[in-house]
Picture 1: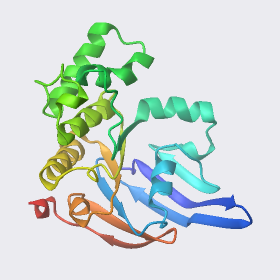
Picture 2: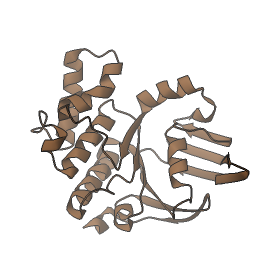
Picture 3: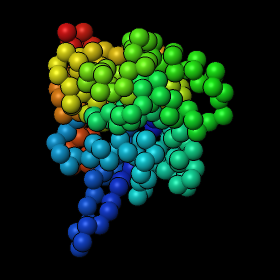
Length: 234
C-alpha cells in the first residue's frame, strides 16, 4: 500500500532581515495510512514547520509533498483551503473552543461550511461525540468541562468531517498526566481502529511513547527514528 504521506526532498527557506533561515533542508519522509507518528526535537528543529507543510498551512520552498498521491506543494491558496476542509483535522494545545457555544455547537462549526442537512450534521456530531466518550456532554459549554473534556470536544470537531489526516501540535501540553494519557489513548484508537493518519508534535517523551513511531528532528533534518509499543504508556 502506498503511504498516505510521502515527502520528497523538501526544503523550506525564509528571510528574516538580512538573515536566511532554513528550518527544513532536503527532508524526505513516508507515513503509512493509519500510522500515529510523533515528531520530537529541540525548539527551532523544524517540527512545527514540517507539521504546517503536511497540513497544507504552508508551502515548501522546494520538493514534493504527496498526500494520498496528490502533490499539495503546488496548489494555490484557494485550492489548499478547499483541500484542507476535506482532508485535514487540526488538534492543538489550546482547544480554541467558542466559549458561548455548547460542545455540540462547537463540533458543528466545520460542518456549517458544507451542504449537509441539519439532520445529516446531527448524525455526524453525535457519532463524533460518542467516539470521544462525550455523548452525555453535548449541551455543556467549555466552562462546564474539564481540560481533558475540552480537548475531546476539540478532537471531535477535528474528526467530524471524517478527514484522512489529523495533525496535532502539543495536544497534551496543557493537560495533567491522567487527562493527557486519556487523550493519547484516544489518538491511538483513532489511528489503530479508525485508520486515521496522525502526525503529532510534542516535547513530552511520554506522549511520544504513545505513538507508533517517533522521528527526531535536529536543524531541519531527520536524525533518529524509534518505535515504541503503545503499552509503554501505562
